[in-house]
Length: 535
Image (cartoon, rainbow, N blue to C red; front, top):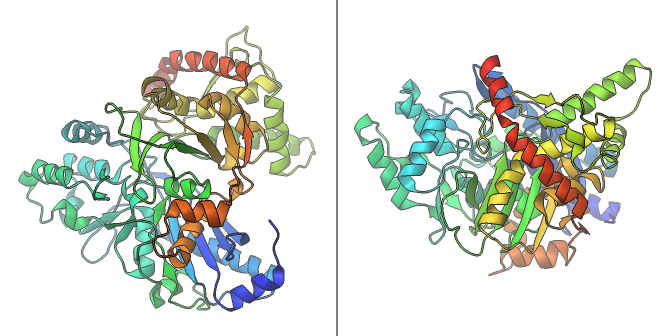
């Protein structure tokens, strides 16, 4: 991608740039794109969730400090690269981790700390709602958090006037509008694919379920309005601009597209919004999404049913844990190197260790790992206990050790994907990968192809991730022509036929992964026992 610095400078000065910000689990990333959808500047802010009384959370202070820090880092990048200040932008979009629970009272006060997707504390609610709706309600979903709070007889529930996701909260503060993009909304409550809105039948069932509790609200009254990509979601207010940029430089008035979750932005960033396409996002968590031609044959507790940003049905296999444990081991090797007087940057260390994994045995030499920092619903494991185990006769070397952790990062995902591919026989024309796992060329892609048993493509823009994806949705909101679909916009104006670098699965890798995954499933009792003993 070539960038003409003078053209970019003029675009920024004239307020024609588009910005996307995504709040991921460990990083908040801001991307500015030009009118050719090319990233021209970026910024980031590292953050981490905290365990507060057995609740994984980020404080409101964390959220705003991180959002402002990431935006200011982008502004600094613009100033250093193009010599101009960012005073006005054409459009902006906000995306964040899906699911979770942010509940507010009528005075707009947060009632309880933000409960993130990472919490596995809603098992009873998820089971009861799944049975009631005959529709899978995962523990991460916002409605499961609300109903679990009801079952727990939490005092705050009677005072709920509005509940939403993290992206929905930020959008509300930026624009004053209580809305949510349909993709993010589909992780709050089931969507009716025909009406492109929350399912009215299930809303009625929920209201009837809790009618005897005496709350002064009905479910529809406390949820955001659902919007499709490109629909009017408001503009940035003076208050919103001041919140994002406390320096006062940013002007109000930018179009703000419907807020989306990281699933929807991943679809946009990989051009995976059409039927029979799929994408897999691999970072702190990992999820694979396949856009379906029709409904699944039955309810699967391991599979989420969500939507694209335009409301098409998507089957999603989601695992709470992916690279956290893997990254921790890489950091340990860095610490060892520094203790030995060897300095190397993290990209070099990752590349060295990841590539060494390709020299390992296809079945990892009998080694086994569970990188569970938190609980997993698919498996199931209630709480996280990272665990590495081996037998005395395992082939214990660096290559097998690293390959084991790469396999383990995708182990839970593979269990879910096997349901879609082997049981439901869904057809997948292409899968595109994005996220931190793919940053080292060829390694994560090869391991993922073995796990999915399908070709995996990675585009040049894969490293841009969801921040670029929400910037594309913001650009679509202001630049689409009358009647132009998101699919057509992405195909013709953004990707222009680029399908990335494809890697076919290796037969030996697939066989080795199958052997590993059988050992992974058999050994789960060891992980579950570790949780039981160490709680």
